[in-house]
Length: 116
Image (cartoon, rainbow, N blue to C red; front, side, top):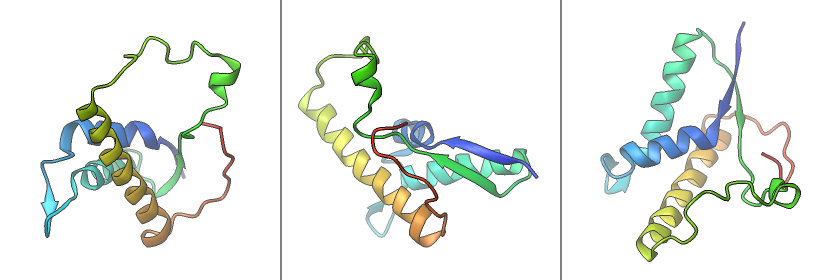
């Protein structure tokens, strides 16, 4: 059986930019969760598997210490609105990860701070 390695941050950011505010349930935004699960369902269906490994980015990457130019080409300063939107989305990301671990029961087998 196939085991999928999912770039969780990529799935979450894709949902952030496509569905973040388009869906809600009982006044709670559900777009990021729905978008993430929709993508997950599509790849599981395509490869006919339910075996999944979720790779998560670390918020503080050791890669920056090794290679300071990592992501250096990105916009240097965000507006307050962009910062607020990112903060809001990261809170939704944390909710999705919590749902994966606690409600859907995907286990956390290995975790190391600073690694992606």
